[in-house]
Length: 99
Length: 248
Image (cartoon, rainbow over all chains, first blue to last red; front, side):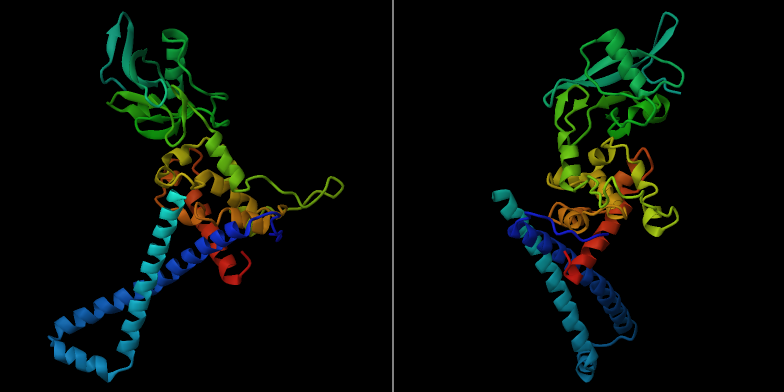
């Protein structure tokens, strides 16, 4: 594939293209991480139920390790980024329709 | 064998067919068609136009599955009518023939294909040569990965069955659609083509390849058994890679 810069493409149009491409990359990347997070989260729930852990015991274990706060921080960030992508897409669609 | 609703008139068995008449505000009209062996849907429409109602508008050319001009909606699904047998689509139901979805109706079974081909142009579906007439012929190894990737995609006949079957095209009028993206994929993998980044930009916008929801209706209904969904998935990867590398 030979790179040829298209003549006359408007900056606004190019920004829109790059924005759409980056939204796609962010959505796919965050979805991949989210899939792993959900599996770990479900496994954690099953473990807690099968071992009859109380809420206090779970919180204690959470505080005893740096892994779990880090894990759930990533979980929240990933969910927030997906929401951001969806919100961005929604706003873009509304703006396109009303333009 | 198709027999539902069929009546015997003299020695000839007939069966009922509903055909769309008029423009967007038109309606289906019933015709009783003589049943023939190995009858195609195009044979049915042709019989109506030649023997029952000469004002019926429809489009066809080759009748052998090469030109892509006879696609219509048959019992709710877009199909090429010249290679679709009545037996296989109607079963025990009435045969219903309408214009393709997602394209403006000109009259009866004829749709305006301009929006469909405009999107081919928008996706930069034309070949941009890098050589001149004075250069030697390009040597493309048939077994090279880029050439093998487009062994099937070059067989698209532009019938618009995939376009009419795509839900995203219906929801999002700006979406380029499976055929235009399949064409872009073909050219992206053509080592002789020089439109590189320009074409990627053309198919990476809001109505580009990222809008595909991977429903795979295009792949399921393509009469040539192509895989537009796979072409679009490859384009998504190329666009993502270019965005990350900063070359988009």
